[in-house]
Length: 399
Image (cartoon, rainbow, N blue to C red):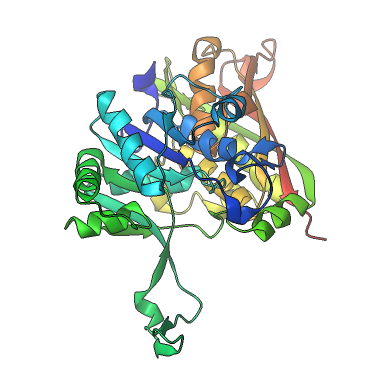
């Protein structure tokens, strides 16, 4: 079944989530990665988009000694098929990453690895896509944002020593992407020499002599560090919004249709400008409707040739990213497909998984159903197929 799922890059990827810190600067008695954010632990928010991506082959989480019960409660209800047993972290983040990389290597993995801080709970599917895409040609790549504040360098007395030009400065985020073998070798060399103090894995790769490239980060990919970060998020009033979407395509000569990002063999294709995926088109409109942000034709006009034969997963990922950029979250996506054929049942779970990956949510938040129109209308006559979608999201109150 998996061979019929469309992905930008079929190579398998591993993920290491770093969750061994104590989070003392965030305040409270519970480490920040286990504090509740919108009803779920921060770590669960960070884990879900990776667990929903079918390209992720293995996930390992580095946790602190004594946090086993908290961690088990955190992952309850998550898809754990690719989740390895947690590794006990070290005294520093650098130690925790090294130990997590060792666990992946011992498990037989030797491909690209994404290192992500559990304190960044708003990572999007689009950002994960960019991280994976960067590994097609790079040994190390990190998400970066232009610096908007003026930066000063101080001397030993606390006076201004230099004002660097902002156009050459960036702030960096996670997930950072690396070749596992190269990063693990750099970590082991630094460990053998007793070198610590590297604030991220990119700095360690620079020390080892490897080039590090950048890709676009996201302002919504916040790191929770200080008490005001947590209290500000906890105090936000979230308003439930519901959007609906509808799409229809007529059958045309062909041998397959795309439904929910899954290629399904069929005696006919569909007439469309993109790949004609009625499920993802309806879902995209449902999310945009909940945002009051136009419709799929507004953002991806059929008159634009760049969208010809485009994978509709790009449209859904775009809409989901719009939700994240507004500080919101997707609670549930519900779809009904109306057609006489093809049958949806055999492909239901593959479709749910692909929708979850594109939207950056857990599979448990996706439902898909199918029905016929009792031989009535254009779907009943076998002239085409349709999809109706409902998206439930929560956004910060903007009033």
